[in-house]
Amino acid sequence: MWVGLDGDDIVMAHIPRNAKVRNLQRDPRIVLSIQADGKNPIGMQEYLVVHGTATVTEGGAADVLNRLVKVYASPDAEFPLPPGAPPGFVVHISPDRLGGFGPWVS
Image: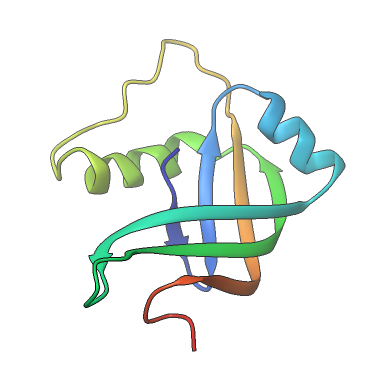
């Protein structure tokens, strides 16, 4: 799953109203775990855990996916939307608490 930043929020987009979207509409609590590239001096892998609250809005998924594909694939890439794709859903995650192992944890 691709994620990005939108101000202080983490953002992701989905074209279909899949189980993830339905579940977040029903219960907005969310936990993301993201593995980082770094390791500490003794070799332990760094990772980030974000506990937050999700807000799901209909529409705008294509714009978010086209912004994220430039980060995850290449600066010239365009997200391959199917013809007649629905507007999809955008999920904004407001972080409530950070955890994991890395410089972001004090």
